[in-house]
Image (tube, rainbow, N blue to C red):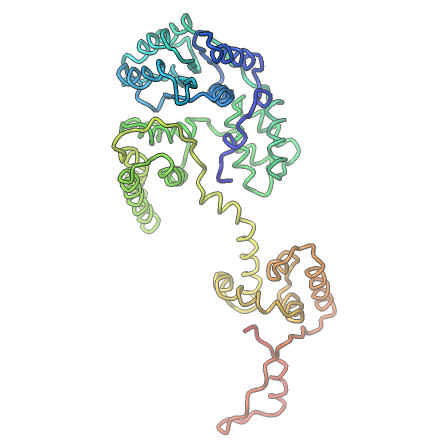
Length: 459
């Protein structure tokens, strides 16, 4: 699950786009006219968060082979920045003569630092020789943004019907080989508020367990939806302001540990300069030192330094911000732990069973004894005897035999071990310990020696 599902299941055609089908048709017709050389007014896509506004822009560009030049809310969008970045792109073709799609994302989120940005956008898009798409959530709350309606073709994205979302989520679960309790997927679709991107991320999180449950859906759906993780990552990796990175961190619902893992995973994806990468990881390592002090001393006052270094420290590690599009990835460590959760639980169960019989800790059994047990299980007699002695189930036997639980090999060992336990017979091992030779200093009786001959030991 290292790849995020919004990226993995990004629509490849208009037919795979969920919701707002009329707008999709109009946008594709608009793009085809541009591609044939007929200039069109810019598109202003506005409305429901997570309904696919940015997704549609990238889908159009991919379908027609256009290069995307994007500025979003995490980028500095002052008049000078827009004229420098967008100005040149709006007048020039990309390599091999293809068009460039100018994407101005979240134009209603211009900050105080973006002084003059709205007026610069208005003047540039009027004379652009390349297609322009703007996205916004609300185009009426700000006068400068509202004025864009008169020079653009505004298309309002409506809330996606939850049944359409549920149908797509069930298709994805089937493709991933995951299962869900009855009503869980519909509950997730109903609780996402029409936000398809959020629903996909929530489904991916819930699918990390054995199955998607209604209890898990209720926890996800009831939480307060604050700033999404992508926005936090953009503020950290593309912003150059201490205050901007700090505000994004404090407004998000990410825990400090989750934020740390996301930043660690995506530093090499966003930063290309070796010096920037080195400085970012140096500050992240300092944050980890403070985390260690928190756990050892239980002094949570260090948390302000840990989160500050992991977020604002990494944000200010770069020499200059990059405007290249990066699809941020889910932390690989968490994905690995999720994939191996079943195996780790199986080993823990084995450690507890064997440790209870041998007076050893589960940790010692897992680290020291399990590798030798796998060798001992190569003997069928030993496999049956040990399975009977420790009361192993089919999954534990299958693990020690490196076979499937349903294979004949595992089932036969399980049946023989169960028969031994039912009869109350003593398990017979292939290798038995011979009685120790009599010592001249201490003689043992023949009865004791005979009794010792029947004793066995693991290793």
